Image (cartoon, rainbow, N blue to C red):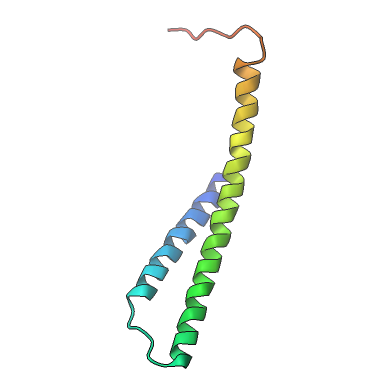
Length: 86
């Protein structure tokens, strides 16, 4: 996933969280029909939010694995380390 794609997902995630807060601040439904519509719309927002969070989590997990491999190669491979110039 590219940096731009991640940023788009994060922005969408923030927008969904805001929509859920707005949804929660609205007047409570008074009938079963209103309640069912309200619940369904909230669930749709929550489901999309969860899907985005899972995609981001998968990407972060892959990134951590990559960083671990890189650190093992750079610092734990038994090779002499390159000294940085001061």
